[in-house]
Image (cartoon, rainbow, N blue to C red):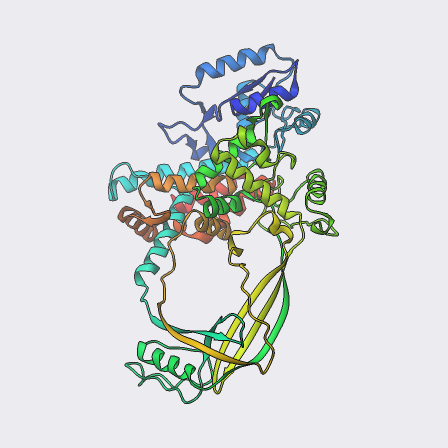
Length: 567
């Protein structure tokens, strides 16, 4: 008997294992700390008091009955710390020795991966279980001790969370920066120029001559503009600058031709998938993870039956297996040609913070081309799968190459700049455009050489105002949490959902805005519980949890160090 977490997963795995195996689902956790009491014996070395979750009694009975009939029970919950802890709780419920080879893990739900896992069962990794228990108990200590305080001081029914509180503070800090921001007026001058009979092209005025001194309110305290960067703050000066640009003759002072190449991005991690899906598909973090879970657990592909389409979606690694690399190579050469595949396969190194426990998120087979299986997927599944497939295939391709041209123009003491770029070779962009390089549009300039005379068609002053920093959205908040080491891939989506559900933050046109309640709670915590809302403290706690998972630290030590000053 193989025990997994979800029924969809059970169905897909049962098909791969065939006769002699039954696959059952535990529907997530079956044991947890009690809801009605603290559940941690602080005096007795932080001994947790676990109970069977209410409402799961019948399921536990049925699973025990099935387990009694089996020669062997394998625990196949997800391959992360949470999954390891679920396996440990199941071992307790079914009287399985956690030190016996009872645990099987796989990074993708495919026939070879499942069969390989069954051949290599191993004991439950107690260090990883302890890391999950420590996180669970830390969150319980903070929640149970701080929430009643918030009820008394702010309002009934509130709750405080360890990682959520820091996240709300980051959103509040950004809001304070927006509120304190004072917008400044500035002007630019757009030039439209022509060489002979060629098409006109655009350039920006970048510097003025020495004879240009400012007018208007700012004249007294600001020096005249000498041959440096344009710095105009009122209409009067802007119009004078445009008039000066229209006098005299413009010519080409310098032409620089370069070739620029742009490398493909690494395959997705949980964080980069959530960011890209937010930017390109408008998905919230929660929706991305929900749809990715469906693709991972298996989609019914008609005659092919239920098939897992992507590898495990909670990962911070960009590593991929040699098998996947070989498959991508074959696909790229067959469909695009040899020149699209690099001499040496692209390898993406893990970040320092990465646990590197799993591969990156990739299709289980490049052969599942999105358009060919589209009819089996709903719209959201198709769009997310297509994004994952394209990003993975692109990650194995050669860079895109651009011809770029940057030109300096001169007219007496005035200087202007123009630039253009043209895609010379698409490389990976034949498959996938990165969200941050959608500005790589072709911009062409006529053939220009040093000394060429140009005709100015018009000089247009344009008014602008400096903008406050933007509010965080799903993409930028996940990026920030990852950069600051707050939370882990599996926690980003739940953090966001929790702070929204608690009413500390609201989502307004896809951006997060703190509520009055959010400000009040953060101010209170900041005054009396500085550590709880301190991002460095929270990030250090994450790395200490990693230390427990790596067997370098006991979880009782971590809880003791935290609890004493906190209490």
